[in-house]
Image (tube, rainbow, N blue to C red):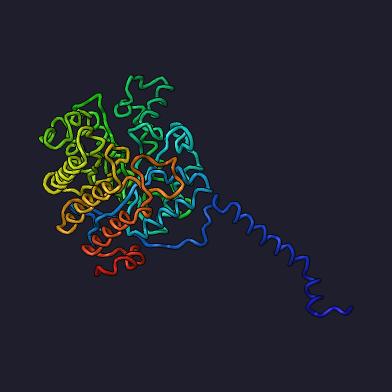
Length: 444
């Protein structure tokens, strides 16, 4: 058989051609198998986000007032550790964007225990950090900003109790109360090291340090802080002052809040008239005093009337919740001169008289307060549902969680709020694609 010129050429160069092909296939295999480890992301969609800023009682993005329709999905980082779960991270963030939501509040902590980000003081699990990297990168891809909480006052995911246990193992901070988290020098050092490590983390997917990433809306020092061993409030106040100053020394670009529930302390004129009951003044926190610090950019409030009262019916709880919200918005307008964020609100399905329609009424009341505040340029700057999940996540649910698209009336309330806020202050570029689909009746 006679060889063609091309065949002879291939034969002569075969020694070079086949190794090149083999190397290319090998590189492709490495990318598919290990690309996540090296941060490769060739299909990354770049969405331009600006840092959110504060001016007086309002947030601003690119010069426009920014009022927030947001939600909680505390489970994002923990769920993303397992690669097979990551489609759910994408699903909830895409769903949030589709509903016109703009900020998701989630945990940036897991101290000790299963899937711990911080295994022990100063020791971190890189797998879990990469899960948080993934959450931030996926949020950016969907135009969603994140409010990241840095530690829990409660036991879930370690919290301040885990810090106290670590110190006790070292023979320090020996105390009968986990409130030593707030005053022991060793534990304060543990927490500062954690904060610095998180804020200066470089995301393996985006290449951006967390402190430089506008995907992060704000940091929250601690979820629902209480220091009941010092009801005067001095211990917690000192801790907030020290830690907020420390955060700002590392990161001046992001907003910062405490993570308060909103209770008025012993020294507050509202300790009797503003609190749900007398016990709320003795928790060691004080909404006005804690939020007044110059290093705190906005105040946070939670709304759980059915957890605070056990002898009131639904109508009475609803009435108090309205009074509670109005009181704190007035504080923002007149006392603090800062935005007020209702960073958790929910209604339990374990109440004896619970009916699904009650949730819609409660949700509507909260959303209406934020809309009216936005319309009048007041300090009520946003609200965050507790909590949203996707199907098949029963292990992460509690008596407040919902899959928002499973109940059409709830889904409509959420999307209508996004439309109303957009009508008042304009549509963010990241919202435009989705809002035009269900805001046709509202001129944006």
